[in-house]
Length: 260
Ligand SMILES: [Zn+2]
Image (cartoon, rainbow, N blue to C red; front, side, top):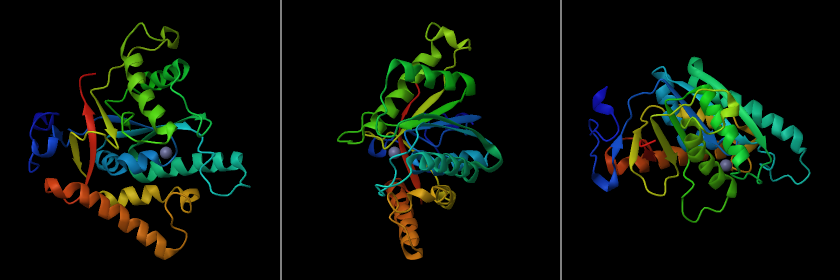
């Protein structure tokens, strides 16, 4: 397993090429993926989580907002939509990880109005201390030209939540032992330095994405069978394209931080 420690050359992947620092982490015992909205985790790192879950990693989810603006219908019942999206997220987590599915936690902040306040940082740190994941995954808050504020704030909350979780004098009122994860993987990375070979796990990612039925129209542009097939083809092509420069059939790319 030591050969797969971050920073070590993994078999078959030309580390050093195109800024790559490491690839294919040793499968962690547990992982926590932190997303702004239901479906962000599946888009960002779904195939990586599926790969790890297949090897026994317990996969937890933390979804920060209620997803209540995720529709193009101006007359939508947003309370009902938020409830539907929670159910879809639980189903997506089950499809990704099967028996290795862990907790699915919702902080239910209003969609589109997420901030990275001290109070929310404390709530994220509390979840990290409760679940004690070996690896945390989240949005890259430093992705340039990103417009959606929820994604930026969600990324900051993941990073700053780890700092608050690891240090004993932060949020003592939690009454929980500090926890320091081994690695943080940021998806949509502004500066890619880590690759996960997800060959064989793209279809599991797709099945999990397709649990988010409320998003077929607005996010996936897939309201009939032909459009669903086109959506699947776009995802397959994208992951193949990410892997191609590194000689793998399908990849998800990240910025990895191990100095936590
Ligand atoms: Zn999102």
